[in-house]
Length: 634
Ligand SMILES: Cc1cc2nc3c(=O)[nH]c(=O)nc-3n(C[C@H](O)[C@H](O)[C@H](O)COP(=O)(O)OP(=O)(O)OC[C@H]3O[C@@H](n4cnc5c(N)ncnc54)[C@H](O)[C@@H]3O)c2cc1C
Image (cartoon, rainbow, N blue to C red; front, top):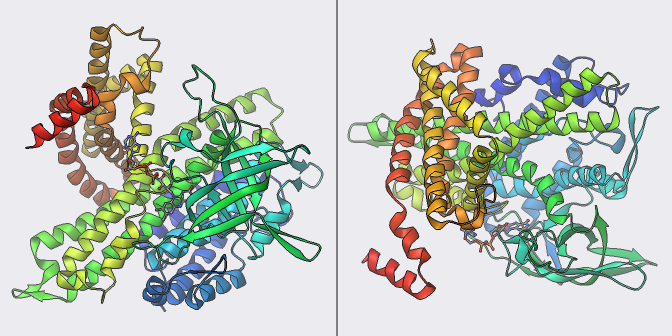
């Protein structure tokens, strides 16, 4: 029997020894000190693995064999409702029977109380079978968890201290329906005129005479938007003058139901006008949703919509990282199996040097990606759980409280650093590996017979949704450079430490990783020096009043390059830590460094030698800049 967990030793590594499950299980199980908690961390992890084994079999045996049918039999719009084809409906029915939608919800809400970190490899395995199914399934349990997180944040969840469990929570009905597999939710942000630029959102929410919020506007490209429950971001405030963040601070978040049954009559509040026809990702319905004076419940306070969305974003982006891992695994394995069979010029093509290098590179990228994805997800979840602990069960001893607050800050910092890297590396890596998979299949890759082209079509949305690759790169660059401005002494310390280790560390792998760190810090130093010089020459303001939009043009131009270097540094750091604990991981680190070292050298060279000409053209008045660009190209 095929099994996507049992055939994947790299994935198993993280459950058998790669991750420190102890503290996470401790926080997950004993936060509530529930009577039915797993008695030890080991037993808890054995339980998590049993779920992965079960889902490994389900994804390999029930989903993967029908992926071609999912690709050709699409959801359809029928009289204002979206209908799934039988092949997809059957998978959803089976998942409902497995009762997995509540996997990560507390037991008192009908869940299994597993860490979110267990659901992410499930996403990966589903995505290895079919990424669109993984995406749709994510809008079940994922949205129930989002409802709980939002309710905790706005303090509408009460904790029963006697029973050590949640006593009541605002969205309990919605959560119960989702856990039972009867409903799901969607996240409705994008509009025809506003995608990356959320400040441009136009959907409005206003209170009527009875104080009821009512929403009007159209959202587009909404994954699983035929949901019963919609988390909608809408404008409630009037833009303020001289507020750099006006636009984002004008947004609020609402829960809108698609319909309500009142006195036996169904009253509809969300209208599904259009189902998008897409390049791939066909098992997931992408819906245009119209709200017309639709009643909505405000979540949190007015003007907090953007902040609340960010609260959910890290998990969503990690989720895309794991979807990407699934496609990478599928593409690499398909290519490897084909290459081992296909003869050319006296040997199978996997023995030809270039193809052998492609296949090894694909496997190494996957192992590196999984390393930062698991690490990032672990820190993200640790931070959420410590936050909950401090909120509901703060330690009475001052020293212990301080220790937990310091741990919280550390986990938040690492998760904030790793999450955009995981989203970028995963999504771009999936496109790259799927394209290589086609190339390795030759003509058979371009025709539909082997399914290689489907993987590329499915992968291509990953760098777009949940924040495009360019937006991730901008975030990483701004975080990195503002970090230097806020803490120059820390930057200097990091530089001295990396230099010292790059010369004197006893382990040669550690010296190589330190050299990569030094290269990244050198790039940041170069960008800061150039930005400071430009600011001095322009005589604009003081160094205390940096304006990212105005002052960071060169850094924004090179943001994607800094992102790529940051990924290589982060992956190498995590693989080094693994190799130091488990020597059998050392070959993975060495293979990764072989790729990363020349890549970072090249990127640094491009950053430090290019950009001025293009930036000069952008600074000219609109028409002239365009002409100069055309002239420079011809
Ligand atoms: C299949 C699918 C499912 C989706 N699911 C959802 C969903 O469930 N909910 C939801 O709300 N949305 C969803 N989306 C929408 C998705 O999040 C947006 O498409 C995405 O945020 C990009 O917005 P846009 O399409 O308006 O492109 P734009 O924002 O117009 O961007 C176009 C290009 O310009 C680049 N760009 C924009 N601004 C900058 C900048 N400052 N610097 C450099 N480059 C920039 C972008 O990176 C991109 O390459 C989905 C989209 C698709 C295709």
